[in-house]
Image 1 (cartoon, rainbow, N blue to C red):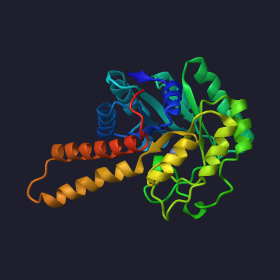
Image 2 (image 1 turned 90 degrees about the horizontal axis):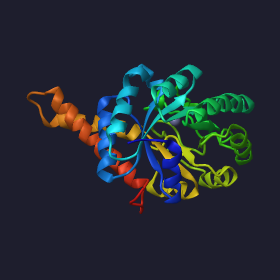
Image 3 (image 1 turned 180 degrees about the vertical axis):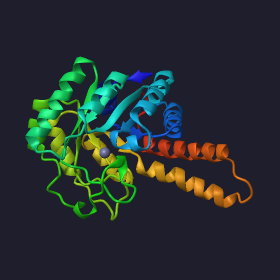
Length: 292
Ligand SMILES: [Zn+2]
């Protein structure tokens, strides 16, 4: 069933688990994500990044995401990821998305507050949740997520990490429902092993008291997932590794079968590989909990 983000994250936080948020810019990803969540009986977040409009526009994939969510037997949040323009965010809300992200994290603090506040006011009047971002999650040139421009040379800089006191003021003024924070994760593939500032997650959570969001959830160790979740991370955006897993399975399949290829077989086995990778992620974020 179609679900709101607030309730799903509140339940997850109470269980000390996190909810997987998958970017699904094609039908195979939508189907694999729903099947993975249903088999594990866990809620899931389907999201469309505004930057993925180049792969498939919101107007095409949005109704499909909503249709699958409504017909599912587990709670499914349909969310706009990295909403950069007012126009795209409003279109997602009008379409029926239950949650939107306003990403004004590359703007000055006061401007980020002003833009986020405006979106929260509209969204809340419609019963829609809002994720905001404070600090800036960088993007790797390798498999960079969500269609953002890469910023390899800046990765490792810590001055863009989220400041706990600023976060407190930001949440108090904007009334956002959850907050994406910067603490060392990167969109795309890590060029070197990530060093996460997990203590910062705790400090921010203590100040804001709302669920925190990890962007760049691919390539983080099991141990770091658990500490991050214990410290306040409740939504984990996971895209790059599933994307890679689907492609690797297809490459393997083509290498094994050298006579005739049929697209339907390729699509079917890629969907299976995606589902299996999604389940791995859902289980990693849900150690110990079984109910919702
Ligand atoms: Zn992101």
